[in-house]
Length: 258
Image (cartoon, rainbow, N blue to C red; front, side, top):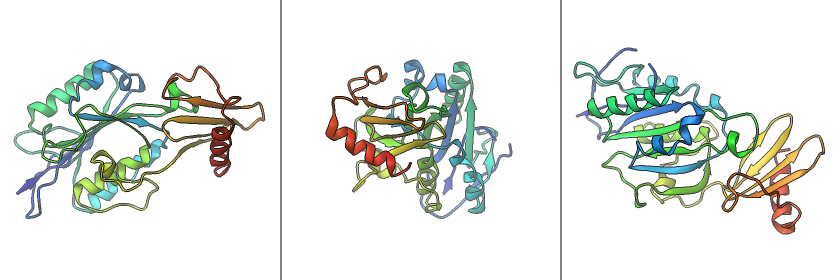
């Protein structure tokens, strides 16, 4: 029985035969930030489950290659060729044409249907919607579907740190020792509980969101902000002065990471 795992941009090709159960191909596409919010681009993934993408360190993916390779997986930068499929692939797409070409090649190579595809991008350096709130799209393997309808939007906040444990669980390896959690139970709606908050912390801001409300504290003492992202996704109206109980709850959550 053959299995293949792909994670986007790598070089050598390898095909492995194992007696274990079939595992999905894994393809991580890291696109330019502007591509992620393009509805024409996300339409490339009709089987996708779209998440609120909350802040996570880009470095969270570092080391995933070594974890996979230490478990016998080859990391490649090319798609299937001459009948040999990559085991683990990580693709970078800086333009729309590059992304369309990547998805087209995945389909032509026969990798797409049974692939776990995670489409995401780098985060910015502020806690505001155009920098921190980046859309993530997840396409499950056809044989490992979710109970959710295709194209569902899940408001629970996820981070870049959740990608490695998701990949490892899908590959049947287990999990690493990082801070993230596998998104597979969340996607399949089998998660008993999910995190309440994710955080953004740097020298200028401390921010926290539960995927529905976002609280931002300015470290220089210039003020605090609260946004209802369900009705105000572009964060144009600061409601910090009108939601005292919610404000206090979010403020306490932020100060836990101050």
